[in-house]
Image 1 (tube, rainbow, N blue to C red):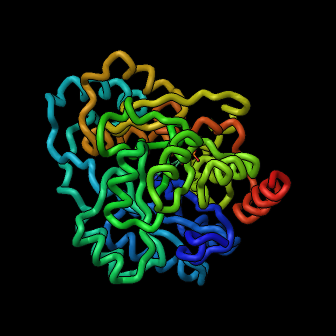
Image 2 (tube, rainbow, N blue to C red):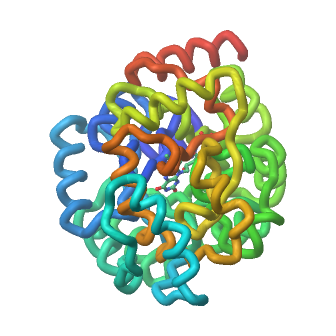
Length: 350
Ligand SMILES: Cc1cc2nc3c(=O)[nH]c(=O)nc-3n(C[C@H](O)[C@H](O)[C@H](O)COP(=O)(O)O)c2cc1C
């Protein structure tokens, strides 16, 4: 067992990525923690009361450590351009989905302060963040509360900032990763570094333990990440088809249809922030209208009605189907079985 696993209180070097917007939930987090890995709850889209409820439900299902994750930055509550053209694009899609015409939602101020207050009160064993860095005061309070702290970097420069802020581990989020890019210092285009390369670079430049994240689907790939200098791995897409995950049926079906192919792309269409997901109709519609997209999280709120309706109507054309480049290799097995298989494959490779 290495220092990071010791600090996190887990046996196996496998972290289930926090997955906001549905796939992540207490059942999945607890199943992973009970299997010896680290389960994660995605708190960013939740109110403090919802975070309390998810932590309580997770604690009913496991006594092992688990992680709560938040977005620590990248929040813009005012539009930086005229929203009318974007509303015009959405209008016929709302018609198609039998929805009333779209309107610009009122986006509340950044909820991070009240969310972190709930986390400090709940004291999960591990807290992780992405999109930025919490203030020195928040970092001090997290440390004082005894929590292990994990930040997300997409470049060496960001990893150095996190190490200086005093994190216990750094998620090296490579270009292959599913969902939002965690980039917070510089443009996302300049931060599309392949996972293994990023792990090597960060391990060479900082003394903080590195957690490889992006495109890792098998034990052989975990072995390669550990050889590159990682102390653990964080997998998202690999868990999307687990029966415990909250992945909607239309989303699961789209993943199964992607079998064998890398059909993912990076888009800002759904949320205003660059993210990797399966190509679909909405991404195509927006591909030559990039300049209309509103900033995160306004675009995310604006497309929520469309995405929810598409999910409940089983229509993958207008859903955000976040997935990493390894999506064609996702396995539909219970989380504990997936972890046992990954560990067996890892053993065979070491
Ligand atoms: C559906 C989905 C939702 C995600 N939501 C979050 C999140 O809320 N917070 C976060 O730090 N990372 C989030 N991620 C990114 C993961 O932390 C991780 O970097 C990524 O899943 C790794 O790539 P992989 O999907 O190829 O394993 C999400 C990933 C997916 C697939």
